Image (cartoon, rainbow, N blue to C red; front, side, top):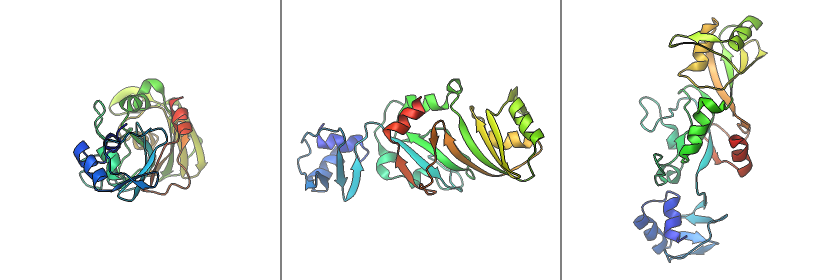
Length: 240
């Protein structure tokens, strides 16, 4: 692939901008400054630098983000900063693939919810992960206002009725970690679902953190606000 096209595919600007970056000596491949925008490179495992920033070629982007509190999963936030401001510009500017421009969040977390969030420019992956048909489990660590008991757990497992749907919503798994800490696993996603489910058993969510999606657990060394690429093994595990 030509160098200007490589940069374009990775979100470093229009083809003209990318060609200009090369011609100005702002791109290094293999530790050497490259000034020929039409030079061909094998993209497999390709690493390069643009204006001093290290980058690895990814045909499609799959990243995880540790979402901090006080951020919105929206490109056009209303009150709080957008999660997209936590990502480098190339991830936000990757060229459009089908309906997806740049990376998009796979589902959403409320502004006060923290934890594991996936982002990608792969529309099929977004559909698969969000589709109720695939029953991808999502694990939440719930801090509750009132003490938990076995009766509440039984109700959550049997199913509770939310105000907008007559069909009961059930937890796939539910475990009391301590008096005010519930580990809840869901395989479907509805608006404010965890908060509404806890309200339905006469409790209240005081804190909410997503710790796992499918086989992928939020790494302990990924601090709030940080992101990283998904590894091939992690991606394969998510796809099942």
